[in-house]
Length: 361
Ligand SMILES: [Fe+2]
Ligand SMILES: [Fe+2]
Image (cartoon, rainbow, N blue to C red; front, side, top):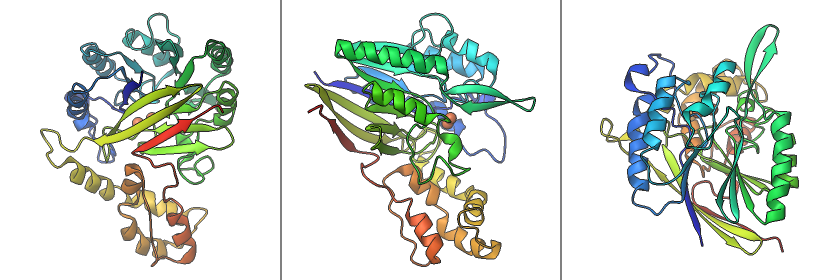
């Protein structure tokens, strides 16, 4: 029997009176609730086995936003599974209270933030917590990291599932495979990767995991690691362009599977009927500083005046990356800059609509 599920990521739910009033705000959290409602209305028309929300459920971990979301999810006729994103657990204390908000959505008891949820006799969902805090010279810093206790638990759990012939799906907020060129080393991209992605990918590979669902980057992308024979399917955010969500059908075929992925977008909410145009422009309007850093920092290190000349051509560069399946052409750029930006063109598999197959034979 095919298994049908949906993914909506980085909801960043913000009740209207909690919306941060900052001119530098990059995300359209004022549309978080109406955008979610559009998705839920669409999902109500589908036969759905479950909905997955891979973290950044709330604007910034506000208890009332967690409570609102949990109450809304409780009204749905299908199971929902969540994991914490960095915005959901902004302090060490919130790591202990997160599970309590989501008792029916992956965390039935205790405060442990990893779980293995049976979905059917031959399918299970493993949720991991990738949020940790480290002391950096007296300052607590939040990092993307899966701790040793989880890695040991994961190895054991995967060995058990393999013995039982159960296919594991894994979800974790931070990316585990690079979605952008040089993402692990670039200072801008690095914070979206799990700090110990290599260690996690090793455990996943040894445990026979092929599919990992992530969020955090706010980009539609499917990346494949040859070395670990592993897909990282990251889903863009409902509060940033192009407001996507995914519909997936998984068919087990012998010891393997076929996963068909389709993506849709929230194109309008009641207070913004042209949401896609509005949010693409919003993103373009806020791109200048980020682009200037890309152009003037390593590896390009372009002089400021040259960078300023190129910035207008890149106004929608990030919006196009976020949309997935981008193909870039900058013939008017100096050779090094041209090669650098064109290298962000998407490589297979496709990002929005794809069919991934795996066979043990
Ligand atoms: Fe996010
Ligand atoms: Fe995040």
